[in-house]
View 1 (cartoon, helix red, strand yellow):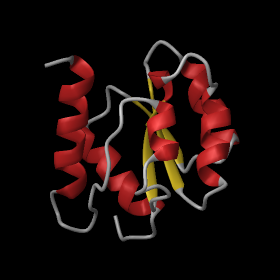
View 2 (cartoon, one colour):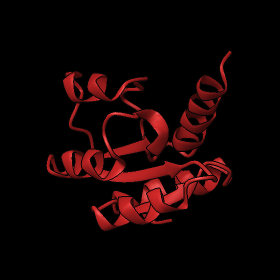
View 3 (cartoon, rainbow, N blue to C red):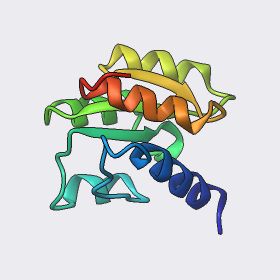
View 4 (cartoon, rainbow, N blue to C red):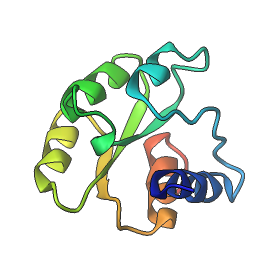
Length: 115
């Protein structure tokens, strides 16, 4: 199992643990998100490093234009991506090294649920 797959599984478990959030799709590629019948969703947790062709701020703006809240997960070695993501409209940007429980808590906050 790849590191990315393990992270996605762990994050899905944390997001859905208390029953207030439901994961409706997990995609590996940026284009797959936009073309999935389940999109737009209430929330997208976006890996800033998931695309080398599309800057994180462009992806955030595209997702936000659908009315979807966005949380961006950034690599620890790219502090500039967090600022660009939040400036583009992300609810927040968190380093990939933070506990998945914090990402889940921010996910609830991004869609207006109590944290």
